[in-house]
Length: 489
Ligand SMILES: Cc1cc2nc3c(=O)[nH]c(=O)nc-3n(C[C@H](O)[C@H](O)[C@H](O)COP(=O)(O)OP(=O)(O)OC[C@H]3O[C@@H](n4cnc5c(N)ncnc54)[C@H](O)[C@@H]3O)c2cc1C
Image (tube, rainbow, N blue to C red; front, side):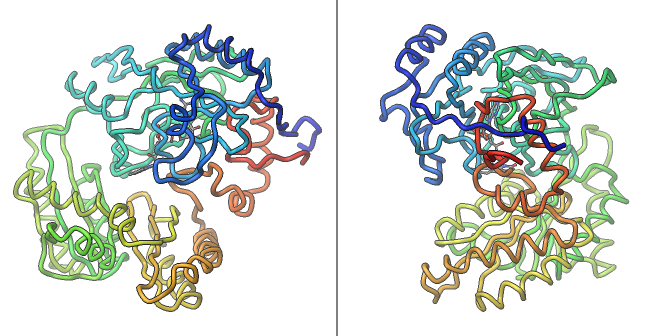
């Protein structure tokens, strides 16, 4: 597979002013931003990470405009950074600080093109905010199941490009599993028209999967046909106290046996994680008096009104108490109580931010090995920072842990951050050693390229370079993101 054409080229020339006029002719005068006051919000992640400098921000309104923008930029060898809601967490959606990169924002492409309840499908443009897609589906008595903490700002184009996960993956799968078809503008400006609501189409390679999770490095997604589902008419939510992550895995298996695929969320939180939220949000109350070492927030959902879901769920939980699988349980008796449970879960990132410096890992391991991962990695981290605080939470059903560490109270910030590289290494090494992944949800971007090269199968890396080179030979889409730039292989 070695070949000279595997090179990823870099362009370093400053884009000419004539390019700006050409772009303005395509997208209209309001579709090109160049003043720093207008471009700075597009040049930095919302948490203040990865500050860069956009040469310009271009905001097309149609697929034809995206195509013309790409063709024009390709002619000038100018790099394009696709951007949706800019909620990504790995530096993939913002320009670098060279001042030579153009941000291509999809946010003006926000039309719902079509909803077909009989096909259980909807076609939406890439710049649609996830929440508006959910609402449009609900208005047609259907459900689009992707739910994320960032759903009020993240776009479908960004969700697809990161193959986003979220709270309901245990039942519905990642974003990849919600897609029937894609429309994509390629590096030469041609448009791949793959919008289709077909459930079956075995006509060769399924090309859409290259762009899903591609983090904008292979093409610009302009629209997608998405799967819809029946609206759940019944829901029951429980706050469950447990002794260990092993018990959580056993509970998930037991609920699966009793309730089939009705389990729609299964979120684990360590005691220290719950306490952190309660410390920073003292108005919140834990639903149980038991300060158990671990907690899971379980939700079951059902479309039919006639199945006695709550009763079946309650019976399964009683059985779990009787078999010593769980210590205690509180079943939400109202929408308000359900919301109070979810508030504790959803406020973890904000509690961590308020608490100060932390190290974050977005790993996955086989579900059956979650406990083994934690039991192996914690002593290894403690050997580096003895009183390190583990703020562990995640989606047990996906084997995905947001395995974060906060600074010990008594430790200086500089000393803690100096240990970061060693801690990251221990976490990634331990996950990889038991068949896990270094990135379960957030992707690679500019943050995890070195560890991608270290842990991903070298043959897979070679294939990724080949695909990138075949689809974007002049490296204009998100250069140096996901795959590091290389002069040769
Ligand atoms: C509070 C919070 C909670 C979050 N929770 C979750 C979670 O539960 N699960 C999860 O998976 N992630 C989560 N995220 C991360 C983030 O929201 C997701 O990755 C989301 O899918 C990004 O969407 P976006 O529109 O903001 O994309 P952006 O951040 O704009 O872009 C992300 C990547 O996609 C590329 N891109 C964007 N649009 C396009 C397009 N149309 N065509 C081609 N490439 C494109 C960009 O170049 C970049 O590489 C969370 C983030 C925050 C801030």
